Every structure is written in structure tokens, then in C-alpha cells.
Length: 321
Image (cartoon, helix red, strand yellow):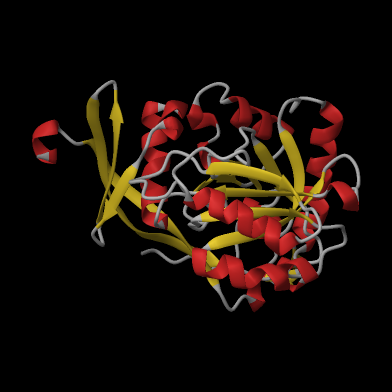
């Protein structure tokens, strides 16, 4: 692992700097920072939000339901207008029960109704069943972090991006939401696409549209990819981005399984009746200081370590036996 201890990159080490400006100056790789979750619960909660969405009345009430299942709570608000308290929506994206690997979450939606906890309990029950549910809903949710009370970069850059996306009209047919903190504010603006579970940083309008539409070569968006939250580790996420560079966007539709033994990572899926697998070695790479937002780099007490992926290769069918 290499360590960068000099606050260079054209930045005065003693000057206060926004964390997202520092990440850009240092060309910090965001891969492997998305986290891994069994699901997401999106709840329309009126703005403004406290620093932690879990501290809202809704978050306190729902915590006991969500924590045992590994579901992450995201406060959401429509990007274009305020939520009508009588029409607030709650959306659950959950991994299919018993599924080996990951291609996408299953999506369930309901109005909040008279009891939020009862509504969420019904969504959780539907997600746990193998049978078709009337609560199942096929739609795409695009969540842009605008959580300024958590980090000023998301409040400034994220909110601006959400407004720009809404005004552009280029996400017609998709649900565009402002959302609460989802990690990685140093890569602001950040956004999440569900149900495919991909998280992105360093966003602008063109990147969001490119990702949603899967336009052009994936390699053009690779440097902004934080990872897929349906994969079980940052090492697998780091391998995945390298495989995506080679095989393209269609990989995100495959039911991917993965393994990591401490050095060697492997990603496997079925395609046209054949088992396809890619492998590589994943190690900690460059480490750079991680100053808090609006703090000087010289005051940083934490660091960010990137993932280095080498020896990326297709695995032969004989090796899979």
C-alpha cells in the first residue's frame, strides 16, 4: 500500500477546503464506498431533515423493523414539489428471498396511510414472500443526496443537481428524489439508482442521464462508480468496475455471485446458457488524507485508501469445475 502524506495536488495544506473539492483535486477513486445492503426503505419525510434520518419521528418508529433485516432508511422528498402529507409514499427495495447472487432488488410501494409502521410491516411481509404481491411496483427511483444538514457539499452540489435534473425533463418516466445521507459526501454530488442498486459520485446532469440510459461506453462513467450495494464487499465492487470496463453495461442485468479469499476476487454469472466468470487480485492501494468538510488537509486525522485491482482475467470453464 502506498501512502500520500503530502497535501499537494495544487492545494494549500493549511487552507480550509470542501471535502468534495479535495477528492477531485486528489483524483480519489470512489469505488468500493457504496456499502452493501439487503434493501432500502424510502420514506417521504418533509424537509428539513435532521443530521441523521434515523432521528426523525419516522426513523425512530421504523428502526426496530429495519435493523434486524439490514435495510437502510432513506428519507426522500420529490425533487420538484413538496410532499403532500396525505399522499406520502413509502417504497421498499429488497433482495429476493433466497436468491443466490444479485441482479436487482424487488420493488414494493404503498401510500403511508394511517399507520406508517403497519404500512412498512406489510411491505416487508410482501418482500419476504415468494408469491406475487399487489404491492409490487415496477419503476426506477433516482435518488440524489441533498442532505445539507449532514454535509455542506451535498447541500450545495447535490441540491443544485436535483434542481437541474428536475428542470431538464430528461428523466421523464423515472422517479427523481432528493434523499438523505447515503455515505460518500466527499464524492458529492452522489446519486443512487434503484432497483439496480448502483451508487455514483462526482455527478453532473450528463453523468446521471448517461447512467440511467446506459448510454455510450461504460468506461466513460467508470471513474464515478462507487459500487453496487447488492454485492457483499468493497473488494467485489472493485473487481466489478474492472469487469464492467471490459464487458459493458449489460453486466448490471446479470445475476452476479462473487467470492473473495483475502487476495483473489471472482465474479460469476450466467449468460446465454453459459457460466461466465472473471477474476482478479484486489489489494489496498493509495492512501490519501481525508479532511473533514471545510477543514484544512493538514488537520486530517483520517485517511481514504483506494482499492488496487490487478491481473483481471476471464476464468476458463475448466477452472470453474
